[in-house]
Every structure is written in structure tokens, then in C-alpha cells.
Length: 388
Image (cartoon, helix red, strand yellow):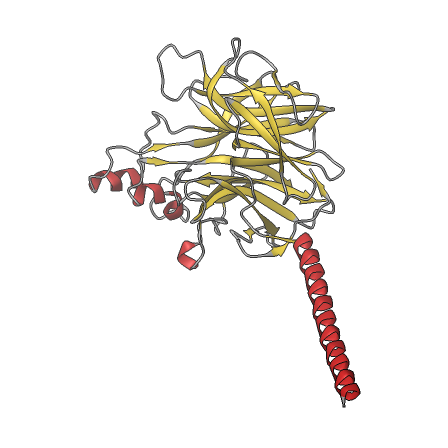
């Protein structure tokens, strides 16, 4: 009886051990699967607190992100990644507000390009030459470095050029013929514009005038020391209320948020024979910030706004929690079959803090752009092999 009981106990212990072993093996497999899944997926927002994000592809799977803020003091910092999802702070790469600096404050929207083994940073800042004490005296500068992590030094101790009004949000495009073009935004400061939306707001007693920012383009000198010719107006807010794009581009006014309409944060690229200019509208600090685009047959226009704008906007009305989506740039897969847009936005969790998102952009057969975002759910990571 004792032998039988002992045998039964040993058998029961073996079964328990076997069960626990199987359970542990299942847990290990599940953990490995989860680990594998995590390595192949991501979700927005990324762990980067930037406004106006721009990604430089430095080749061989090395990416550097620049933007407004990000821990930099009177200048700009950069983050590094090899998968476009996990980013490591590499420190401050440009510092202004020094003894001999032309730029003394409000360092915004840097974009870094690699040309002839040199790295060029185009950025916006307040110009110290301000005899009339203007509140917004923004100009665009160029800094150069031997590495994407800097240090970047001013190419000249002065802005790139002075069009006679404050400007921000530089974007550079090199065409197939080797010519360079600079796109920028004239800020809304002291720029009241007559339009039907301005008349509407005045009749309601909300605002006496509506100021606007407009996007211009101009040819760049190949050494980036200046410009060629005169600026060309490329994009502006709609003048008529029945314009297809008037509703979404006027939300900062119609929500009584502020007496300004913006066209800023432009990004230009070429697909086949068409030039695409993406842009942001509405107040960058509010929930209505959104992205649209226009197309042209030449780099300096005429640009026609798309009928399916906006292509990126807040999703809270549809049950999401993302607002303030804008100021985007793009990265492309090596075979050009995949395009990703990087932009800033806000969530309920991040509050007023601007954080970085990255979502896929598609060009349809009819040439229309579609952005599959903003997203916050788990999804496959962007391609790891990207070209400029």
C-alpha cells in the first residue's frame, strides 16, 4: 500500500512538473514571439519631443532627425536612429546667440542636407539687425558641418537674404537639372490681407483684420551664399469662401482662435513630371494644424491645391486622440515603392508638448497623395533601407 501510494505520488509530481515545464515553454515561446513582434512593429508617437521634424538619410541605414526644441538651448539638437522608430539623442549640433552670431533667438525648423560630402543646415531665427524693434524679425540662415552631428558653423555671419519681410520654414529642393530652389514662408506678422473670410470675421465682430502667411520660392546659388532672381508667390490661403480649401485652412479664424491664416512648413518633392508642395495651415499651437498639398509642372509653379486636402489632420472627431498634426517632411524607400511622412502632433497624454509621428504616404495612380494617419495603433515598422 505504501509502495503504491509512493508510486502514485511520484507519478503526480511528474505530471505536475511536466505541466509546469510545458507552461514555461509556452511562456518562453510567447515571450519570444512578442519580442519578435515588438522588433517588427511600432506605434506613434515616437519618443522624441520635437516640433517641425526633419529626417536626414546619411546612407547605410543611418538617420538623423532635427527639429525645433528637443532639449537644445539657443540652437538645435539631433537624434540618431537606424530604423526610423528608435531614436537616441546625440546632443546639440548648432548654437546661436553667440558674440558674433547674426541669429539671437527663436531657433526654429532646421533642415539638414548632404551635398558634396558637406552637411548644410537651413534654419529660421530672429535677426539681431532690428532697428525698428520688430517683434517678429525672422530670417533664414545656413550653417555647415563635416558631420551630421556637427558642430554646424554659420556659412556667413548674416542671413541668407532679406526679402524685406520676416520669413521662416526653409525647405531646399535640388531639381534634376542641378538647380537648387529655396522655399519659405512669409510670416503673418503685420501682413493683413483682404478676403471674404476677413470680411466675414469683421462682420461677426470677431476680428478687425486677418493676417496671413504665404509660401514663396526662389532659386538658390549653388554655394548657398545667396539667391538668384526675385521670390515667386506659390501658395496662399483661399480668398473666396466657396473655395474647396477655404474651410479647413480657415479653422483658426472660424473657431475664433486667432486672427491669422497660415501657409507654412512647406516640403517639395518631384514624382515623375509633377512637383508636389506639401504645406501646413492653421495655428501651429492649436488642434486645427493640418497638412495639404499642391502640384505644379515646374519648381516655381503655378501650384494648384489638391481637391482631397487636408491629407493629414486631427482625428478626435473619429474617436482618436491626436491633434495639431503638421510641418511634415518625407523619407523614401530605396525602390521608391514606400514613402513615409514625419510630422509633429499632440495627444491627450502629451498635452501641449509636440511629439513626433511617422506614417506612410501613398501616391495613387491619379497622382493624389494619401497619408495613412495620424495613427497610434501598433503597426509594421517603416522600411529600414531608405534613400534620400
